[in-house]
Image (cartoon, rainbow, N blue to C red):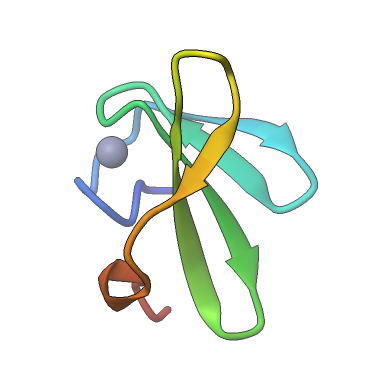
Length: 57
Ligand SMILES: [Zn+2]
């Protein structure tokens, strides 16, 4: 699974259809519409990025 943001391969699976990119430090989730990107806040919570930044598969 390549990162949809940077295209890199430094990704790891963190859950069902959930992946983390070590280069961008973002988590992304696969869904029917495409890929949703989340930033991980300092407190560990997930912050959805601007929907306009969603990448379609
Ligand atoms: Zn990345």
